[in-house]
Length: 217
Image (cartoon, rainbow, N blue to C red; front, side):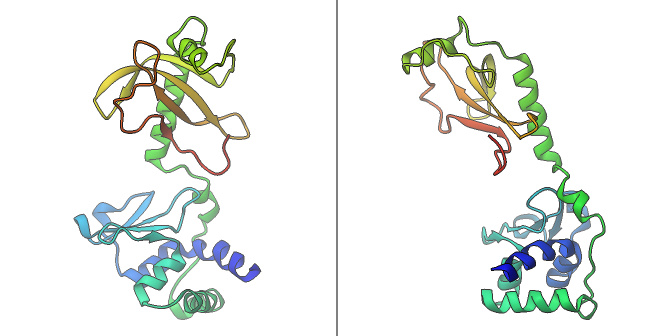
């Protein structure tokens, strides 16, 4: 168990060079600060370089995704146990495999990927524009659910939130999802109709804008 934790903590430090060792040269035109992309178009495989999922991959051909250990298993056709042994060898003799630690590893782990940062910013903008519950459709909706005198600083009303499903604006309840420092990371949006019911013509309702992650409330 401790062995597994050691491998899972150490292996991502080698993300870039290990991915290249396993997959060959990346597609530079499709790679950026947040992702290394291998292959082209629908046959692409992406390895995440920033944030808490640094070292995770997604294969767009097979839909397969997972950690660097999973990538080793799928690329080499080996079992989990064999991949762990191989990972141990890699970490013990990186020079044999021509892999190197990325000195920026810790900084990259703490970097929010750009597309997530954009969602976070949009979530903050919506909260900034939002209103308290009093006298709003949100208050009526909560009353119908039996929640009287609803007051919570993290639950707000917004009269016009965009939905990508029907490309229209809808009234909505916003719930602030923040980290321990009180920094907004995402919002949960519950779309309402104008009779203060939950909008029932939406496929996804409520929807999360931003990243609801393991360390958030």
